[in-house]
Image (cartoon, rainbow, N blue to C red; front, side, top):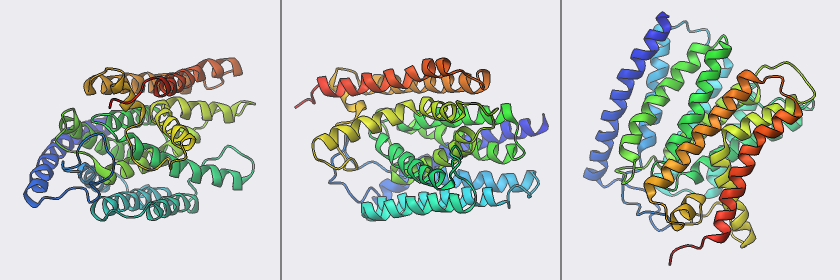
Amino acid sequence: MENALLLTLFFMYTFLLGFLMHKYLINRSRTYNLHKANISAVRWEQQSKPIFGGITFFSLFIFGLINYMVFFPLEIFISGKSIAIILVVTISFLMGLADDLLNTSPLFKFGMQLAAAFLLIYFGIYINIFSNDMLNYLLTIFWVVGIMNSINMLDNMDAITTPSGLFILILIGLIIGVREPADMWFHLTILISIYASMGSFMIFNWHPSKMYMGDNGSQFLGAVLAVLSIIFLWNQPITPSPHTGLFKLATVLIAFTMPLSDTATVSINRLLKGKSPFVGGKDHTTHHLSYAGLSDHMVALVFIIGSLISVTLAFVLTVYYPDASLTTLVIFLAWPAIIFTTLYTLTRIVKPNK
């Protein structure tokens, strides 16, 4: 109870600190004309707005670590798993910040994402569903790189990426609370600092936004989601069964339904046109919802509702159906299948506005 009260108070003053930091960054960016280096790329909106929301994300992440060291024992903090999380998140944030300020090459970003995946594997954080470790390592690399790029690609309209990522992190926090692992308070402290920074960011990112999270924010968020989903979704402790691997895959696919549906749709459509999936454009599922007549506010609400349903289903499956039968898993998997099919079909039948 005492720890819960501490974390509640921590969230309150961290949220206020995040709000003040975002306002400061908006004002400083305007004063010193600090904006994204690559302003020529195709984007949904003009790129003259401040793109440093991720600076607050990372700053409050560090602030959370400091608070943890003050109020909790240090054994967990200095463990290999904690060090890996800190290193990977830091590398990802700095890589995104460098891209915002210097317009780095795609190869540089891909190399840093690979480095993040290798670091996790080195410290023992990897997806463990196969009996062959090499397959586990390859899936981990694919997942880390894929999620970091997926979150980066999803950041294409106001108030889309933040609530989508926030709901998944809330799901992870709830699962931690239910499972009560030994490192529970370390992870909850990190998560609450991120909840506060993202929640305060939403005030300035709701359409019409005053600032963007930038690559520094999307790479930070992608790294956090990739790491924590490996620990608490992919590798959640459940009773072994013939469908253990499918159960874990289903949980992840359901939780990440919205970002993965957008990434898969965009990648398929661009590859069919002979284009790189990683080049910016106005062909995302969010954009096609707009072409279909929805306002930017309504598009955001569609993704918010979709994300809320997704994490609710993932929570129900994880907590109430840990020994789910194949039929039950197929029923739950109908949700991401329906969402992907609907969004992909929309991009095929609704044409961009001229």
